[in-house]
Length: 112
Image 1 (cartoon, rainbow, N blue to C red):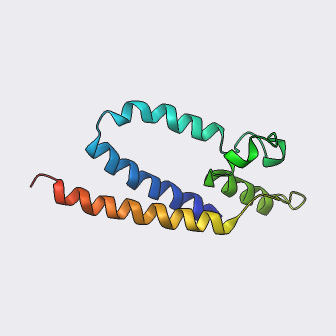
Image 2: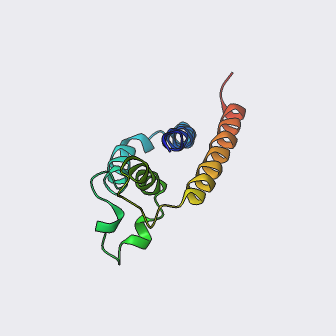
């Protein structure tokens, strides 16, 4: 499970590096967006504590699934009903492909 958090961070870093290259003012807004993402990723609460009307929206966050899988692995009495390893794997693969394609595009436009 820990490798998936690392791969998600690496792929997000690749995407944000490419976006920052083409949109330099993005880095000012990025701190607020990442802080919000941290608080809704299930670090301070479990998915069972999320209101049922907000849960479908927060389940689009792959870090919530990773945190739930880590809790299930660490605590034997906790069994997450919402953690989906397939969603995490597909999201990481898509983000990594997008980040690597963007990095290739960035090399084409980079000054010599």
